[in-house]
Image (cartoon, rainbow over all chains, first blue to last red; front, side, top):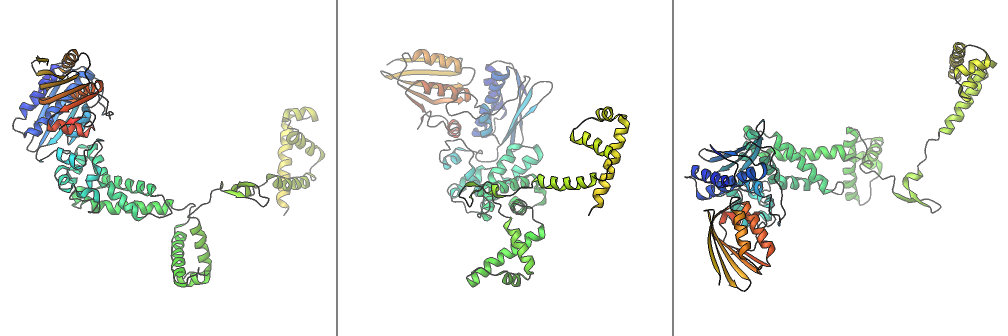
Length: 416
Length: 109
């Protein structure tokens, strides 16, 4: 460990220190570490104006460097535009390291660390690989090259990956290593890289389910979610290759999606299965006879009753819903939407019905009871006002109301 | 032909050669970081008066440069019509390529 004061010259000194510690490492590894240390030290000086410590750990095949400062603030990796002069420091660390991260160290300050493996003959994005991807002018991740790894997500079908296959095998971290980093260090970059690398697989599985029913983008989305689940649940200790675990997980996610959301209305499981059966029968029989099958033929073919066939066809229809806003022209040629053609429940009819019953029941009440009810519910007077009007106490009004309502309820229920 | 030689902060050497009426060639050697990038920028700005049309920055003798250096090159490239960055190290070349700066800085060869 070595401590450096908060001045610009410290950047040079920190880099020298790292270089000296790594004296025996290959030149290109040392150069990359020097550059990354220089960036992290520059951030300490430029952004938090703090002195800092540099710690270099070296094992047989991994170099881990930590830069601790005592200032506030957490570094953020920005994506500068091609013309931006600043904001490239962490970008460079991200590009050259195998992993990096930030750990706050209370009460103030933080540790920014990165690791770099020394056993590979080339870094994660070595010059040769960069060239192979065609200049990599955008700086985007070499996602297309991900296909040709030993644990091969695209199973050799991707034409884009073929040309640079030998390069990518040597310069990409292995899938097992990525999982180790994710499980033991919680390295989110490893997780992101795994997602990126297996996305072509998810996409390919989604393509299997492509049909008119669901947009491909949605399917890819579902498959990608399945992939993320697979990555989070995969246990490397089991000794199964990740792809063998991921494929059924992703397919399961796609199937569940179709089962749950492929239907516009909720249809019971049994009816769904019958619907699929009948739809299949419809297709096969149509192909065989050259005309749409009758319900009886469908029933014979599927060994269901005609009732069940009709039910199933109705259920199948709920795969697709028609919008209430679908434009529609009525008989008089007026344009409108489908929804306009639907009737609504008119509360007025119920009111007429209730009115007739109440009228009949009210005839059974006394004059005074009818008067109190009318004042309360038609004129909307308060019980106290009614009491003053008819010359009784409010208590009595309340009793009259309750009694008359109970009687009317009994009378109305008694009438068939 | 006008040539100056200088040694900045003990880490950096600069030599500026005018190889045409409005064309300069600046060769820098040593190490470039936040500690001396400002001095270098002032030095270059003072020499390049009036502003040239063409500036070739030869970094073949530069042992080290980080993002502070890259930022300076971008500023220089922006203020001349024709800028060229000659002979960066393989590591720098790779960093510049990944950042998509190869064409902005006209990295040669």
